[in-house]
Length: 277
Image (tube, rainbow, N blue to C red; front, side, top):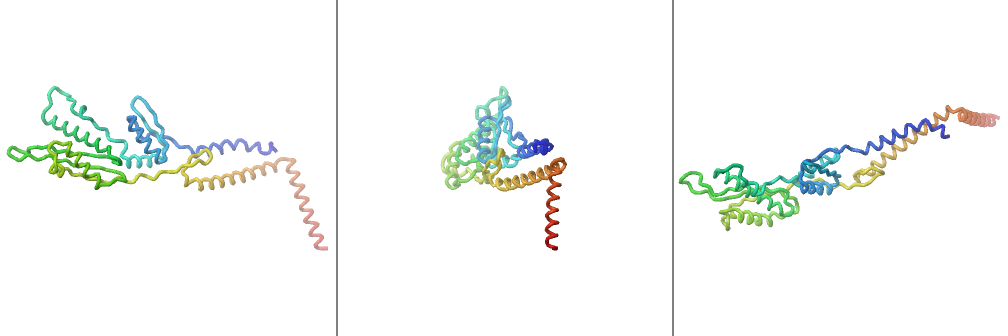
């Protein structure tokens, strides 16, 4: 019987290869030239959402790769988590002079920029704060003879739940007011505007399970198993039909089938003759 199914053997590797390739996906670069700390934050967020991430280190920094089909969901998870975080300059970098002499305007801009960056970095240390921006206005005389405009600040915070706005807003206002000249005291705190907004909810975490060699979503396991069983039944039926056709061409099997058909015909003829008698 081995000779009967031998013509079918070349087809089996192609069928198995097609099934294996169906579960494979191409990896693409999600982020590149990252600091190791930023890369680890992204890996943690994506892994928690059930997305497999490959991390690679090269001379330019860290790159992250995911399956091409996971790009939309990975991007949504990163946006909800405020990743990657915006690169900020510290006060030493901001006040690093590029020339011999700096104008008062340059010094003022550097100071405002550095102060805002430092405050934003501090505000992001609060739990569940996704991103923070701080805009500082220092005392300034608009025109000669005009009164000096007092200091003020505007703070924008995007957060993810759970976070109590009523509890966190006074703490943010005190922190910012204590860090900016001219805003100390109750009058200073009243000049700090805090705007807080919740971030979009991150995509739900995906539960994974193994179906044979393939890693798939748990909720897709039952439909996939049904599909695979149906495909297996079709393959078995196809192989059986092909094997039967091949067997019919074999001389010995053909004679055997002809003899069985003749016997069935003879029995049917005897039964008809008996009924007629």
